[in-house]
Amino acid sequence: MTKSPNRLLATVFGTVYLVFGLLGFAFTGGFSFFSTTGGLLLGMLEVNIFHNVVHLMIGAALLIAGLTTIPAARAVNLSVGALLFALGVAGIFLTNTSANVLAINGADNVLHFACAVVLLAVAVGAEKRVAPPRSGATV
Image (cartoon, rainbow, N blue to C red; front, side):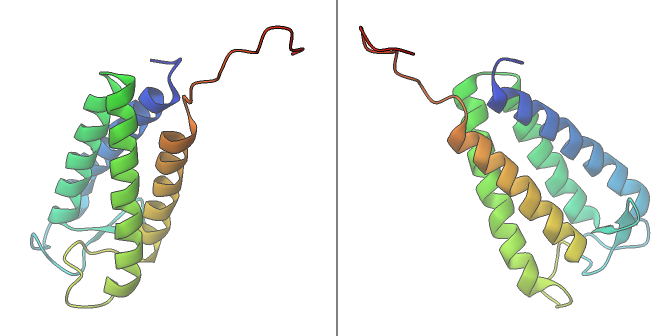
């Protein structure tokens, strides 16, 4: 696993998202499932119950893929990266509206964009097959 950037990243990010999903429940007491506001995880990331469930689903997908094969990890990193990027864009428009069923705030948007960039970069850029040097070529 440590020889594959996609598997390593999926496993680490999956574990972190699972932990965030579980920890989030300690801060969502008194908020409804789709509340447009929520508790503050780590003092800055706003979460409601639905947001926690989404973190758990993302974490499970990443962790399972990271523990299986390189193609699976790469595909899930690419998919989750695209999803988080789309969520970051949507979050810009949803923050402070009645449609904000994930209780997303500005700090969430920054984190979603940052995770998206890392996941997409590794999925697209890592583990490309390198052609062997041509015979007679100097390396």
